[in-house]
Amino acid sequence: MLSTDKRWKELGDVFVNYCLELKPGEKLMIAQNEIETWPLALATYEAAIKAGGYPQIQLKSETLRRAFMKLGKEEQHTWLPGLEALGMEWADAYVALRGGFNLDIYHDIPADVLAANQVVHGKISSLRWKNTRWLLSRVPNAAFAQQAGLDLETVTDMYFNACLMDYSTGLKDWDSWAEKIKSDGNQLVHITGKNTNLKFEVNGTSWQASAVIRNIPGGEIFCAPLNTKNLNGVIYWENPGVLGGRLMPDMQVEWKNGELIKATASNNEDYLNNVLRSDAGASLLGEFAFGTNKFLNHFTNDILWDEKIYGTIHLAFGRCAPGGNNDSAIHWDVVKEMREEGEVTIDGLTVMKDGELLLNKL
Image 1 (cartoon, one colour):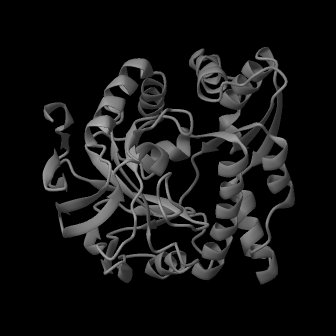
Image 2 (cartoon, rainbow, N blue to C red):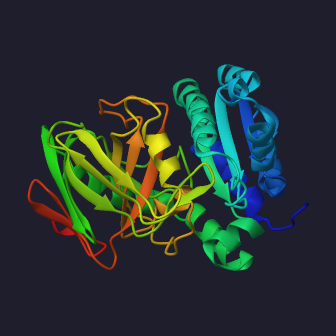
């Protein structure tokens, strides 16, 4: 598990000193998900000590989560993990190093059990959002490479290239794009594409570029939908929706006058609908965004990477981005491919066509 690849130490330094800006005396919780993330956990731990911080490492795994849902009773499935909740109060900063895992690991877990447990994880996520400066990253390993349909060397190089890019230059472009879209009032977004014709309103003042302090690789400009009666139409996702280790291929969701009408998928449709019924806000929109990172070009079936791919868009169900009006324990991004077919207009102005952002022309 000891890696001599110096890029891990470089990335640990970026996490601690650039993304989290850890100060002397501050406490850092490092959630190490899967044992293969150890090289980056160690690098982050060392960087935190050098910065004068007080790091702690918490070991987590989808295998442990499977055991909990497989062997536990109903009252256990909805239990809020006490130490995790307390950790969000203890920590000034938090980093989750999420390793890849077999997406079929929950094949025999009932959809209602998995959905109920996902809500609990969403509550922990809400505490993280509220109480800490946080950072998430999906760290490549053999399971992740297989999930992405790539070899480990290729997917690892893509990760480092995307994470260690010159963000000062990238953010300058992305910030300028967000400023060009901004408006003082509400805006009407219209998405068309494969099996898609969807309209909804967003808060025009809420557009911003990802500052690469919340998840990395970075690369998106996003805004907050408003879930008015102008939320109408249908959207289809070419790649599977992924949540809680389950794939939902051929996802298609329809709204009418601001309410969910129908949600379908060719597999795990029962899980999809359980998730969208988790609470009152789970079936509504919490975020709309464009991917902007050109170092990411291959779908991996992982939202932390795929939502940043240049030429894609994503919508989140549930908890809203800043400037929105939706509350939920769920915040679930689903990425739509736009590079082969699709158009996005904002108040009638075309800002994306077949995956190409046209913001430099505005």
